[in-house]
Image (cartoon, rainbow, N blue to C red; front, side):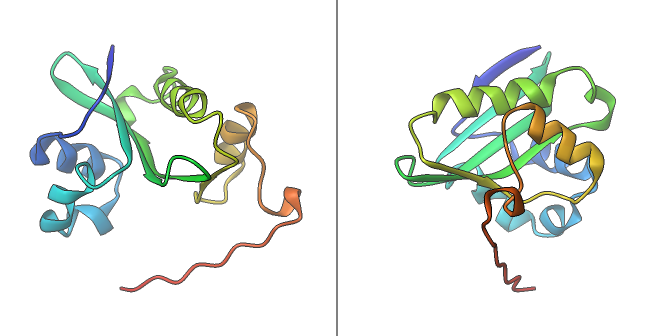
Length: 135
């Protein structure tokens, strides 16, 4: 497995990764997909040979707040430590940042994963979050 920071990733590789994870809100908009990596604060990817198999994408100011917008690993490569490596890398890179946020699905599996890396739910920190989706 090769890991590297990326300012660009081929749109076809992105589409295959996001599609493999069922993230159709991204893959339904190829014009948006072409801009997500260049417009991100930081992107770090996992490659198996030439194939993109994992990605973490960060947005924010990098000083007071970052938001982990995407973290995904293709199903054929899950449970191999790739997601853990990606998130640990970002947490170390931005350890001086006060707020590191993300939104994920509410399952025991995802809660256990993020808790294992030192993260807490908003409820556990006596905080409240709001969201508005523009579809």
